[in-house]
Amino acid sequence: MSETFTSASQEEAGFRERARLSFDLDADICVVGAGLAGLTIALEAARLGASVAVLEGRYIGWNASGHQLGTVMPGFALPLAELIERVGLEDARELWMLAKEGADFVRANATEAAMPGIGLADGVLEVSNVDAGDRLISRLQILNEEFDTEVEGWQADRVRAALRTDRYFHGIYYPRAFQVDGRKYVHGLAALARRAGARIFEDTPVVSIDHSGIRKRIVTPSARLRATHIVLAGNIHLGAPLRRLSETLLPVWRYAGVTAPLGERLREAVAFEGSVMDSDGVDHFRIVEGDRLMWASPETTWDARPQHFAGAIGRRIRAVFPALGDVEIAEVFGGATGHTVHGMPQIGQLRKGLWVASGFGRQGMNTSAMAGQLIARGILSGDERWRLFSPFELVWAGGATGRVAGQLIGLWGRASSAAAGSLARYRERARVKEREREARLAEANRLAGTGPRRPTVRPRSARPAPPPEPARQDEGISQ
Image (cartoon, rainbow, N blue to C red; front, side):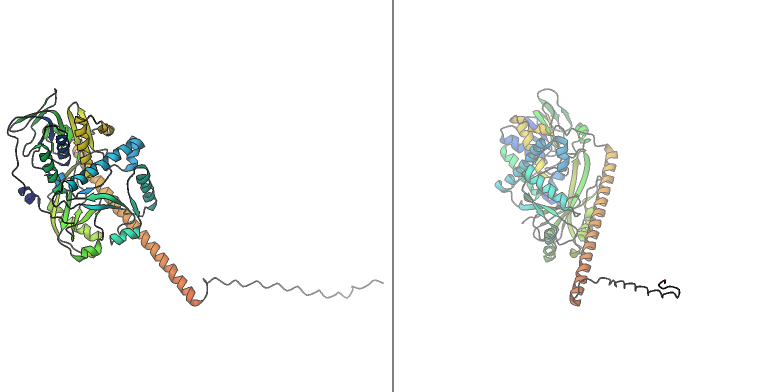
């Protein structure tokens, strides 16, 4: 894999001067937000022949879309069993297929468009912190038989051959899943959208929206825009005019660190080229540039300077891979994502001509791509598959109280995961010691030429018969 990572300021400076909207404009579709979802909508709509304007308050990919690990795989943050329970098996299959189409869309852009330095590499491994073989078999059957997803079950010894740590047990390998340089992909997506005819305006925050009437009106600090359709493709930073929508999202920050080059000692610890994530959502990492490790920190519901997480990321790497020892974290980056209460993205039409594509926290790049395709086709081609997301309505996320609760739940979840993992590893060590003890005893018995020693039971001796009584003097034959 050949990737080069730069800081956010270097990356921003490396692109052309940002264009602001400074004149009144009419368009078929106005997209608010130049992240992965918004740019996908712009690209798909422009390819379908619509005039598209994208308004971005800062710059392309400035938040979570431009600061993520780039893992692309099917599925949603909501566990599969809960998805089936919520919408039924048939609709769950349809949603899963849409998620797979989103992943295919990212792969096609990353390969056919030849985005420079995108570093596409196949394979994602989801590992378990506990010994859960039965659950693994059940999940593999559902994914293979019901959801037509290519997966492989890995036993603990195979996982540990790839990741030389006793931290993990079983795993599920997705050979069709992949990873790209996420920060390069979002800018490559913007370039494709521009090439298709979309106009992207940065440093152009939305001041107000009037979504009444056939032609909606959007006011920015320096110009006005009219459009038949408005798509809210932002996150928690949509701003005052859209605060009610922002309040349906729980803000969650996650930061990732990239180590300094580790040389051969990294190869001795990690012999897997793809992304690795644990089933509890705590660890997420992969090798970049051949000998550097990119590692995501646990989530937090409070903002902080990214560099504050460098120490925590380094300690986590050392805890999982003790052989690496202390590692230098050369760069830390991250951003805020919006998590929905129900765990599914918000995709659909709020009212005629007003659309939403948001809430992609923990979802992955495939769902933002899927949302962009669905909404563009829903507006221009009459595709109504976006209605599959209707059961997942907008729900208030609880404000500051929700953030506190989310932080506590996250801490509890990580503590529970750590405790369960420690207990599983303790039980494994106990089983190994018991097997070693039995092997030593068997070897000792073999060398002694006997089977297992058993206590000797002596037979009880028969009680001697009592002697005959002597005949009395007066006894005799009567005459």
